[in-house]
Length: 154
Image (cartoon, rainbow, N blue to C red; front, top):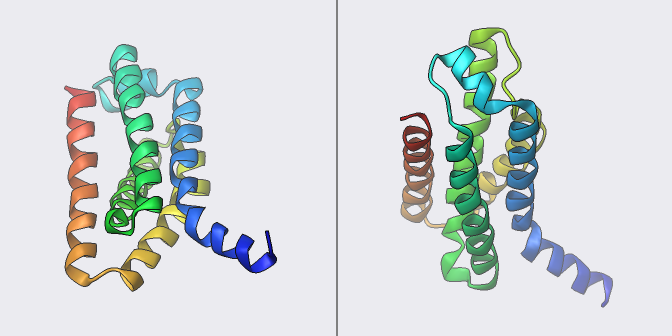
């Protein structure tokens, strides 16, 4: 493949950094004890079973939808939705750590991966998508995060 072909492939497939970041984030939350931390720091816990089920459904679903978005331009809005979800998650990890003065498991991947990758994806989406498409994709990302949080904590 020529260098211009490699550059085109990189431009096309970079959104796969989102599910990769998600997978690393799940690992940090799991081995960092996120379920225990939520109970201690927030007074409401995410059960281990719920953590496994939500992420066991969420990661493969988001990975497949990201591949669909890369392969089908009409689905590119999903990259914006996924990016919004990870940026919201990163901000909430940072705020929770600041509010409790503790390490919120997931904070490192949130700050080092979610913010730059998700931020780039949001910037890209804001430049390449019609305003209405970008706007509803962002709102969908916020709504998905809110729904998953509600399911996880209740």
